[in-house]
Image 1 (cartoon, rainbow, N blue to C red):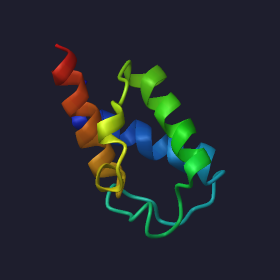
Image 2 (image 1 turned 90 degrees about the horizontal axis):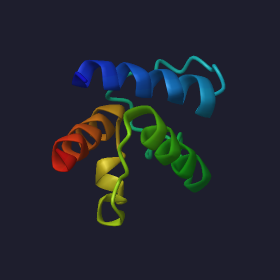
Image 3 (image 1 turned 30 degrees about the vertical axis):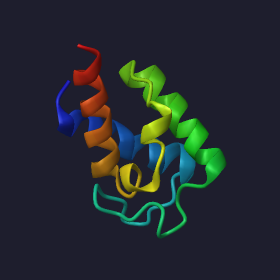
Image 4 (image 1 turned 120 degrees about the vertical axis):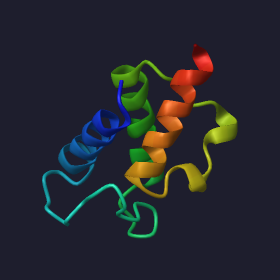
Length: 86
């Protein structure tokens, strides 16, 4: 799966499920944590989405803020985990 496809799917999920369709100009560089878009409950939902959509489980040592600052950083983490399991 291409990184751009992962970004698109993450962006769609966050816009529809977390922001409930609110248009805040979300893109791959939007500061998700800084703007308070992702809370702890939403993080659990996001991790579940990643597991189901991309068949990737994020290990506990990767559950730190630096990996979840933007959609781009989350996509990089997903790609990294896809290659790690290969």
